[in-house]
Amino acid sequence: MSNELPVALVVRAATDDEFERVGELVVGAYREAGHLEKEHGYDVVLRDVRARARWGPVLVATPADDQTTILGSATICPSGTPYAEIARADETEIRFVAVAPTSVRLGIARTLVNACIDHARDAGHHAVVLSVIDWNDPGHRLYEAMGFTRVFERDWNPVPDVSLNVFELVL
Image (cartoon, rainbow, N blue to C red; front, side, top):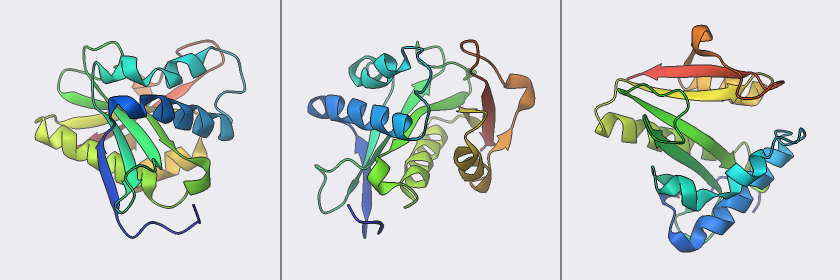
């Protein structure tokens, strides 16, 4: 894929036969960004798309004219489900946002996040929340540019040496 945004993107739910490809895309994106340098076994969680799809929508972004090419993915994790780490009852949590390394900085992550925001509005939730590792400056800039704000009191550490910053978008 060249570094040009496809004319039109489609965001849709991943299908069962795409789960393995989505998992590999997410692992590749996280590895390329340096998120898997420490061995915490997180790659196993990232690959297991089928498990998280049982609890909430796994979205994929594809070119409108080639819906077999997956450019990115994001998962909506409803509060109270095993993959929701920070969502309260009236919030939508976004996790596992990833863009294929060959397609970064093309607006794909923004498109996926906007689809998650639309989902939250449709669900009647008052906010969208997500966690970003503390050193992920591009992620911080993206979410801040989209209107998310840091919620310092909700920052947390899932494992030693991993600090996650919480961002919230009030709808």
